[in-house]
Image (cartoon, rainbow, N blue to C red; front, top):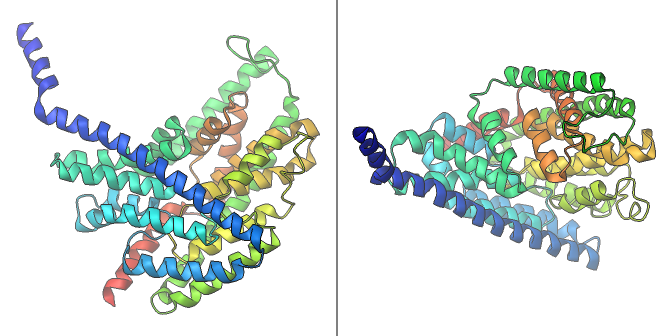
Length: 442
């Protein structure tokens, strides 16, 4: 017994163990602080560009292309490796952990570049999110701290990177559960995607069986009464899952193919590509009344909170074409290789798609269809169904529709895979590796 106690004391007070704990805990706090500062800077950048539009709606025709060229130039010359979402870089680092490439992609220089370039792009009117970049900077901060503290390779190579990436999602969305799920489902890949789908099917079927048996929206403690006609809800699940999966899959497939085809020209014609894409985003922004610019947070929030509410429905009406404008603006922004993510624009596009689909359903179903549409499209893009419904569930604080959200994500994921065979972040990681190889050859 005494020997066992001595062993426990040794393990608890072992300097190496405490150094590891401090790196994990302190790194997580640092990731949260940097993510919070990044969020404030992104909001200010978004606000600054909205003020420019308010002053003159046509100024983006000059500011956006010029801003895109400047951002791409600085990224290429100073922050090479910070291009795009940041999740592909993290996946590359995980696949080849401990290598010189991994150390370069997860350096503190990349953290600075990721934040500053994304903010500069938002000031120019780009359509991008900060969640992918926050995953990247989270992984980079934790990885760098691990190297500085000389932790064992087993921690540096995977544990710190996974923890940093998950912490990035949790801090960006304020969704801690989603951060854990994302680290397992997308980054670790230790959880088989086919098994995740089977698990979700099992959960949905079990939940539906309980509802049928109890003849209502069964809640264990009886605190959530059924307020909606669930025949309409499940029709909405099918429609939002199929439509969201089709549009999300098309977006991913087009973006993957376009990125691959443009790669040979990025070395010699990057200025032309940045100018054309910047001008395209500016024109799309004018056509959308300015709503296609930025992260999409404000638009998505208005659509979700005002769905079915007569007092604010007009202020949240961005038009039937809003999701199309947002999708095109996001695609044009990403093709320039500007540092920026796809999460927030995809959620905004999904909310707009849900608002359009809500017109086909009874008015009292509007908010439900908007949420399901958001999950459907977002899942169609990223093909991580568990992460998608958990993020939306935590963000909207809605637990009444958990089964409907899960079923929508499952349908959307299956539909998207029929169109886009390879998950978008895996494909973009391969394209990034090829692009970096092209640079080295030159």
